[in-house]
Length: 247
Image 1 (spheres, rainbow, N blue to C red):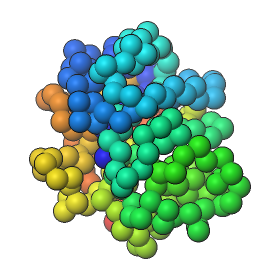
Image 2: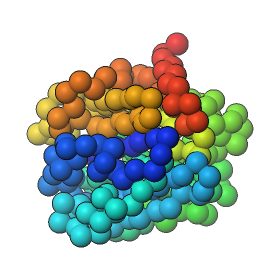
Image 3: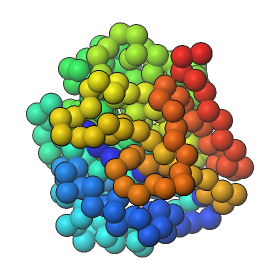
């Protein structure tokens, strides 16, 4: 299980700047979610740039540097808590990237290799790890090639919902022109020792930036993204569209 954060902005900013004074509290969540961290920056005119490290974020000099010095107008941040006996290594550390797309996931699809038979084999050749999360990403890409980005993401989510067992398939999918937030989770499968609301996602937005993140830190004044929803942000305008997956 993991903690997620993502933003898009009209100007280049660091993750710490966008998150504000509470960022230290978010980073402290790596005390439990300490099996690796990663950042994918994706400016609107560039391919994603990826940094991953299979270490605890709050003890990493590279994490401190990347979150406070690396500027972009869009980025994903992931704090990993390895599940299902999956190895702690660079290959299993989020985000995952392919061409213009980057992705992070919180949750578990059971078993971890369940999705592989329905992924286009050409994507499996790009694997750098063994996680269910990377398979989820490649299932999305398989469906995106059939239907386009918005419809492809929804198709992948519906395939998992109807055919597979999962605790959560919450995810964030970033492109040079759009930012998607998937909120689809099972509150009956919250990890042992975690409080209700573990899988909840909250966001805040204004005319210059949009920020979304997992729960567990101070998000007073943020807006909750209701479960079973997909949120899309148009990066050029920062317009937000929320779709009910059940509709």
